[in-house]
Image (cartoon, rainbow, N blue to C red; front, side):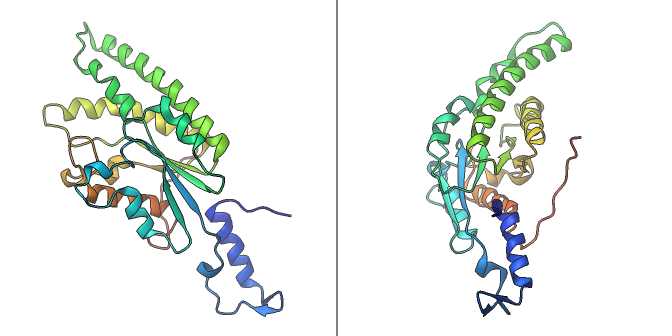
Length: 248
């Protein structure tokens, strides 16, 4: 018996079934793929990028937007907790129910915030500054990869998100953006290592209106994030178009 895991495999199974003239004595003629698709249960893990209800001023949060985009029968559960770091992810992983079929993870922004002091450290040279950044980023990489590996043991079908740039004041934004590149490099390389899909939130939340404050997504920003998640399922437009990374 062959087991099919994930939306892609289930759609493949659906297409194969549709090509058969009969199933259990009944015809499949005219039956749409959606009518025999196995429903997914998506869990959102991480921090306030998903757990943003307290910042939207009554507008829908990310998971509410996502539920409105999913086909009938699909489920979305919010397990992300505002303020979480990679060290907190284990508790969220423990809360994943057995029927969850895929996870979307957005974490690392609070780890970066905890290292914001490096932006103002006095250094004697650019080389010294890079060594300081390198040490902090190496610590983040150890924590992020450990947390992600633990999650993948539970749900291999996982999509990860980068940390967006936020809506910081003009005197802070340029240096913060460069620093975040180093943290995002950790996330991207981990995703490439495990061959995971990536949502680059820097491209999703790119306008001031996407933010309720310098670092939290607004209701409209949450809608963009939800659409990006739906797009990874192939549900937003019925087709997907994505970059591909060949990691050897």
